[in-house]
Length: 398
Ligand SMILES: Cc1cc2nc3c(=O)[nH]c(=O)nc-3n(C[C@H](O)[C@H](O)[C@H](O)COP(=O)(O)OP(=O)(O)OC[C@H]3O[C@@H](n4cnc5c(N)ncnc54)[C@H](O)[C@@H]3O)c2cc1C
Image 1 (cartoon, rainbow, N blue to C red):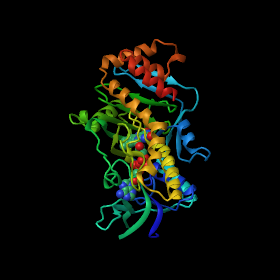
Image 2: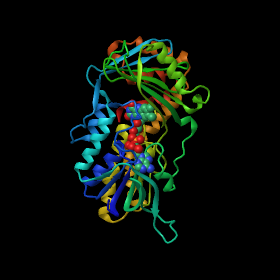
Image 3: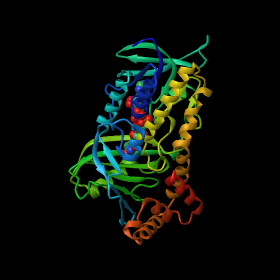
Image 4: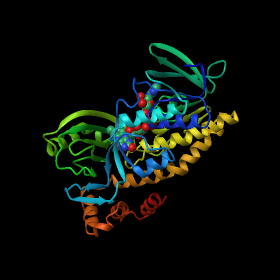
């Protein structure tokens, strides 16, 4: 490890690897630091992605390997058990094998000249100024039992939901309890009666209050089965209890081969995601889709924009927050604005009673199968909230 780089990226998740790769591609000298011993492990994710958005962010790269199963539709299950099947007739999504996927992304970064260190825990930042209270100019990292000070013109915090880089930089990273989804997931073997072409999303107060329960098939007999509920509801009954009760009912013979517990911030992007010499990317910046809780591809998109803007700032020799601000603006135009709309829609949808959800399912089932589209589901659900229909249309049209 050298003592000086153009860019240091903290965290080798999808956001970090993609930021590092893009900055290196554009000529910056980049160090990527990951606290765990292996990129991609442990997995804390349902592993579902939309293939079109993944392709868009990888273009013109080949798609990274690590796709376990192709998905061509979704089964939405109402509280009364009625199922609405949305079938796109072609592959529109996938369930990843994130161990392989994340690892592959880091190899793609390495191929562009990014230097990578694992078992490298960033425990503090270095600041400019005689009193150590100026802008950030590097990180303090513990690597294989030794502490190092490593300087950089720009530090990119891609250190996930528990991001410390943001707080070190004095950015407001606070999340309201209601916006913090409490998640639990198990990978189950020996699941029966699922169609591997579809993801299953189950709604209702008894199943997943203020959130949803998912079944994401990785094969005919293996699936990620998980739940995300608002922190407010989790105070009364834990996500684990809701999930276990469901598994006991639906998959009594299944074996749990992997367990994940974690939080997801389902809120709009942080107000400020840049500071002098610092950028935040992915979960660290709250760039998760607040409706679905999906953050893999959005982290990569943000990483791609951040890496490009960082390299341009290096070329200009200006690492001030103004110089890095185009990253925040581009992100906002590309996804941030949509996330604000989705957040408003989510707030309305998650307040629905079971009766309203059942009525929505019946309204969609009354339509011809070819008219049962996601946009029509939202329109049926929000019939009593006409102002939100415009937000739905804008999200789907953008
Ligand atoms: C239960 C659950 C299910 C989910 N399901 C889905 C899904 O189906 N689809 C989807 O798109 N998203 C899903 N998500 C969200 C998704 O996992 C994240 O949005 C995505 O991983 C964000 O990528 P990232 O690069 O920002 O952060 P991460 O993938 O979290 O990567 C951050 C990295 O930083 C490292 N790190 C942290 N601190 C330090 C430090 N101090 N020093 C060095 N390294 C550090 C971590 O070890 C980690 O490798 C789910 C999340 C959970 C919890």
